Image 1 (cartoon, rainbow, N blue to C red):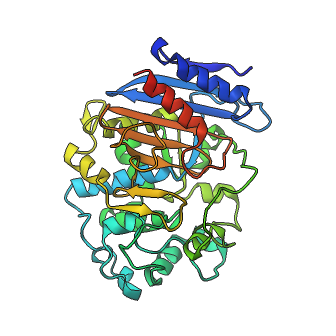
Image 2 (image 1 turned 90 degrees about the horizontal axis):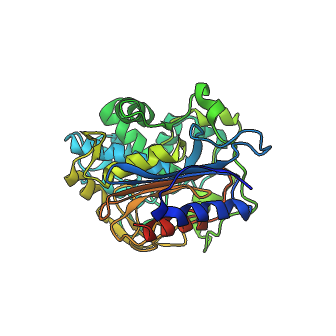
Length: 374
């Protein structure tokens, strides 16, 4: 039996039971689940092991790799620039990144680009996978690339490229990487264990991943899906994993605790307030979460609703019943979301990866049990 640590009040006893059941069924190696209500942490559970050999406990200091859940933090950082009047969602990407206007992309807006409408989900032409380690080289390829579908006609999930696009927009306006800004403006001031690119000094706290035994179900394997996920150069390779882990890639290279993610998303569900300070105005929270496009995604096998970088819960409901909930899910099962209707922030992280692209059953069961206890 795996010992479950942390706390869950009596009204959330079903959450603890569901968490324990996942371990008992062999579905987990190590995991953590946190729920914040009106700014207060009301559930925080963790258990299992941080390594495949089961010699290190998965505890309250353990960091998990969160893959695309990182995109929720990137969306927040863009929103903060808009809130500060330094950026507008409706302006073109080329207005801050002139080279991006190549190949018919001069009219692509920032909100279109970060809501996966720009037609750049990956690179259809072969390249050396080591190129992903070179920020400027990837940005140059994206700037020169022609869209794979008419911009604005549909969404097509950009699993990695959207991080370079959002990160380069941010860097051109702010001067820092998103990883720097996250640490300096949010993580350190509010004692949130959030990282976008992980320094070696923190590597001993990182949970070791147990990879899934099969590929996810990508649905129809069209050209955008192939470019995004299935060609040999669709992800970085050719250099040590630690070198990739250290890069501040805003789409995929986040590392965090569930508690830190839940507190961050809890602030977005609570009019922007985090420990007595406003990290984003209520008007900008609503604007960032507002739907930009809805429909069958061209890359993911889902009927998606996208905000300005945030997944919206309304169509597929991976995160409970809230139609206004928004956040992001990550490869293998992690997720973090805000429910402004109920002032909830919630996060789940783990190191045994599942095959679901979204709506992994482990967090889904925990989230449903949590809502039942409200």
